[in-house]
Image 1 (cartoon, rainbow, N blue to C red):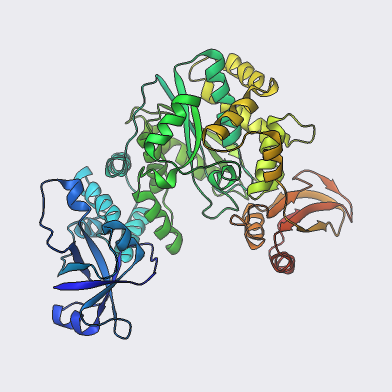
Image 2 (cartoon, rainbow, N blue to C red; image 1 turned 135 degrees about the vertical axis):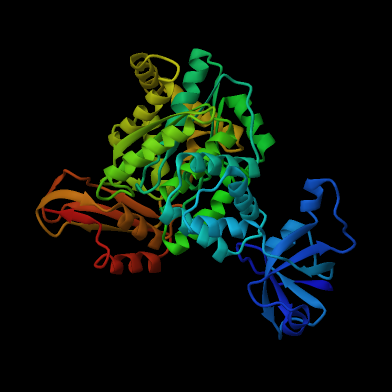
Length: 512
């Protein structure tokens, strides 16, 4: 059936088409079923890339009042994928359920999947052939029934192969990853500055092309922080140009097309509040393999206020290192205590102020964040040099100012202004603030990462870059009644007032 496009200015996060109820009845279709959408006069070609750009599978819903019978309403995702505009004509056909649905059912019944079956599922997720409900069933099947080592490796491989892969002509392609869940854990800019400057200093055949994410459940992601000072969205070609020039970069992974199934799976897992260790390992490792990393250090925090218990962190470490051996990527996992936020600032500007204070060697810099960044950097460099020498080099890069110069070089290469004045101006705090004080005497024995992140988001993070929380005290500190605990910043008074009112329900400090 041939129908005219009617854009609905609707972003659904997936491919959704709306049919007039009468048209759906004629085609024998019901809400939630699939249609194949093709550009008019398109015929299957032998060029797979060209063919994928001209047709796609979409889930349907029904509408009457907003559509004429000869129209089809489509989400922005379809408009973008097929390069459509209002009035264009497209061919619409009923589509059968993909064979990957039978593989999902197989996993639900606790059977083992082979690579072909897993690839079919991941491919159909990426190309929009599976509904959110079917993806949720897959996530639940993996989360509840587990995967063996071969399945995890096959899932990793499938995630890589369905997306883009980047190749480098260097002996060492270094990378690091910090698992989420710890507020203020902004080690990446420091590690990249330290390792990038060490590569220059030692004339190593190495690069550290660091891609990072935006905030999912946290107050800020590394990409949210870095874009305060420079651009973070680049094509693969531009990324490679920057890295060949500076030996390093800070780039958002969301536009590179690396392991694209991961974003959709994470979205579904978050909605059903179920996350499997196997999926965590596969999704993180797939991005590293797709980036072409040869040596990776992964930080896995554990503890009362962290995402993982020590037992779970050990399990993920073991599974990650075993799975990585099946690829050309050497991985070392560090288990770190995560019973409180790291650094003083939570929120994009506040976190970058911590980073800059360490790079500038300010007296009031957060030493806990500095120590962790040096530990990760030394572990990375230990792939190449003995541990003691690696530690000496990393300390030299930081204390000599070379790491700061490399950081500014990257900022400039990505289109930012690397002057001290520009950096300071962009790191100004939000106008409205409120300092919260202790109402009793005692010792701080816990600071809840989730609650700190939640309050920061109430204050406007990460979209309001200058909003967030500055911690005056940490776990282990003795406090008296009236001592300052933390200061909240917001770009408007309403957000600040609301966050203040919510503290009685989500108080983050535990004082004994």
